[in-house]
Structures are given as structure tokens and as C-alpha cells.
Image (cartoon, rainbow over all chains, first blue to last red; front, side, top):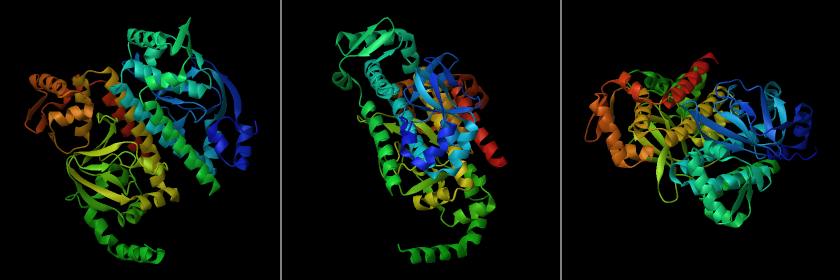
Length: 238
Length: 264
């Protein structure tokens, strides 16, 4: 674990990372596991390595909408960066995989005394804010097919593979659609041979064309994260 | 500006500070303390800041930030409301959050983003105080109470954004309109808004006809009345009957922020 696959941790000076290391515990997060509930205290923060965490806002106790995604570019438990101990959203493991877990208490201590970590996480917060805003716009104005394509691309980028388990019901919760809307959009993408879908497993078969089928919200969010990351590198070399 | 001339201007400004602070805090004017974030700061902090806080009057429809643009100022509304819009490439836009006397426009600047991802438009004309970005960053890097307050405010703003997104997706235009009216009234001293249905349609990202329909229904039950360019809320409690939970979620988040701020 000399160069962590989590990009926040990879961006801080190695002496800072060495200090954090003994407090980071590798965990395997399972698909469907809930890390935070709205209004509940945050006990742990997570740095995803190969898992993907979905940030969901629920209304009327059943309908939800994914407002953001946290993969190995970020950290789950963001309110803690901002000095708040409770979550505003539900954080659900959407792609099972590895993460590094740190107790919120230990994190607070390290965060307060590590300017490089603060800087990296503030920039990340900015990028996440932009992602939330872009996702909101996308959900508002783009059609189901474009949104599904965007979601699949974002997911694939963050889990680092092109095949993952999903159900239509799950996608409906993520995209704020009715299940029939998901089924329609998925069949169109399947018919155009951009994806394949069998027995709860979805596979991207033509990524280049899937990108063209997606709205450019995918590209916009990517650019924001890339920019936040490159500024981070600059800050480090300065 | 060189270091020494900036220092000189600072000293010059400092000499007028006391008088200005007293003036700004007078209840007759919209002093900076009418902004809850500024009001939550210790006296020494607000005194230092007041040197650089400049009172401005914002006009309805004025665009303060364009997405991707470099910003010069952060804004603390006292009697104005600023709306954050996301803008699509085809020009379609809708409100993602509002910033009134409970907040500050420009949190993305403190996160090191340099630019802001959304457009900021004045939704309700009125007074605000603006602070040069340079001063904001100095304060932020100082790591004092303003830093902690603004970080906490960022979280409340994020909750508002997420809730607005879910509300837009799942709730009726009448519910969204009620939410929007209540959040606006909370930031205003009066029950009368200068607002057209067209502007509301722009905020909610829906067609004008949908707003007319929703507003017509609220008018029929005597909750609001409107004439050209004005909306009056006649029965605030009645509005609560039509609103979705999203209003309470956002309101509770800001209430908690300010409650905690007073304890720090």
C-alpha cells in the first residue's frame, strides 16, 4: 500500500500519508450496504479504492434520486470535512469493492493538522458540489436514455470495469425514474448494441458510442474533477 | 497594488471603521448584522471584516456570477436574495439553491475552485454586503470562526441543492412553488414579492403555463394573490398545507447551522 489507489490519499505528501496509514483500515464494502443515513451521526469516513458509493436524497420516504457518486477520486463522509458530524444524505454502496476506513475521530484530528489533506478535500468538495449541481440539471432536462448512459459511464469509470450488477429497480432509484422508464431506456441502448443486460448483470459493449448517446453532463463532471485534481498537483509542487 | 499601498489603504479604512460599524449596525439600515452568518461572528471578527465589507444594492435580474467566470467578490445578502442557477448548453436553466440573509454567495471560492459552477442571479432586489475574494481567502486561511461558519454553511447549501434536485424530480409544480415561496418569505421582511410567473417558471425549470396553473390553484384557495409583477402570500399557514417535505428539510438544515453557530 505504498501508493494508494485512492486519489485524495495519493495526492498528499508521503510523510503525511505515512502518518495516516496506521489509522486506515482496509474494508470490503458490499453492494447495497448503507454507510450513512440522513440525520444520523457519521462514525467513519471511507476512502474508496475499488468500490463506488452513491449519495441519495429521498423524498416521501420511498422515492429517491442519486445526487452524487463517490469513487476512488474522493471520500465518503464529506460533512465531516465541513465540520458537521451528521450526514445529509443516504450513502449506499452501489459498486461493491475495497475501501480504506478511518474513524471519524481520528480523521478529524489528522484533517486539522494536515494542510495538504485539507486542501485536497476542499477542492474535492468543490468538485462534488459541481457534480451535484450538474446531476440536478441533468435529471431535470435530459431524457432517460441520456441519463442512463451518463450514469453507466460514471459508474464504469469509478469501479474500473465495464460490467456490474444492477437491477432496473435499482436504476430507477438512482435516476429518479419509474421502472418502466428504465426498462425502455435500457432496451434502446441494448438494441443499439451499446450495452448488454442479462440476469442482473449489465455490460458496456461499446463505450465510444455510449459516450455519444450520453448527454455532455458526463464530460462536464469529468472536466471539473480533472481540473480539481490538476490544481491539487500544482499546489503540491509549489 | 503593492504591499505598502495596500497596507496604507487598510490603515486609512481602519480609521473610519468604528463609525462605520456603528452605522452599519443601526437597525434603521440594512447593516451587515442582518446577515445571520455575519451576525454569528464574534465582535472582533466582524470589526476586522467591516473594513472591507462594502454595502451594495442589488437589482432584480442582475447577474453576479457566470459559470466558469473568475469572481471578484463574495456576497452576504441582508435584504436581497440571490438565486443559484445551473445552466445547460442550450440555455435551459433552473434554480439549484437560493442564498438570502442566512448565507453567502461564493462558497466555491473558499474551496479553491477559483470559479463557480453555477450562475448567480438576483432574485429579490435589495441590499447586500460584498467582500473582495482576496479578503475572504485571507480570513479563510486564518482558520478562525468565519472559516468554520462558512464550511458549515457549505454543508447546508449542499443539502439544499440535493433536496432541490430531488424535489424537482418527484414533486408537483404546486408543491415546488409552495416550497419556493416559503423559502423566499423566510428571507424577507414582508409577505409581498416582486416576481413574475415567468421568472418563477425560470427558477423551477418548468413551463410558464405550469406555474400559472399551480399559482391559480393556490389563489383559488385564498393562500396567495397576485397581480402583474407581484405575489402576496395571504395565508402562510395555508401554504404549509401545500408544500412538500423538502421545505422543512432545507429549513431545518439552516436552523441547525445557525443554532450551532451561536454555540461556537
